[in-house]
Image (cartoon, rainbow, N blue to C red; front, side, top):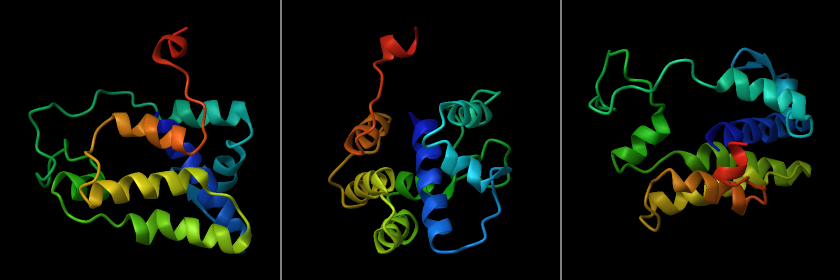
Length: 152
């Protein structure tokens, strides 16, 4: 679910950037166009999903996200903000994609759902948790297979 959100949000962001006339470079080492294509192309989506699948387990539960200079400090800034109960930058980042998408006529349902859920966490209306991944996808209108179906 996390990788699905990542791929879809990146694809929407690329489409908005292209519509605004920006020359886009690579995203995670892949051409920006790959991310936009993954929104409609199942093979490209699978390729990006495979690329994003970690080859090693996440850091040990004992590690602290706020440790500096360790190999286990892999959590990006926005989840760190949430963990430390600081206001995130969601409106300035993903919210901007939503607003610019509206201006150029590009739908951004995943970016809108991400912005809404993270804003609710910022306001204390929602608790951070893994279940928010599925909720975000579903509120964006994305069909999410059940865990039993996904394992088949």
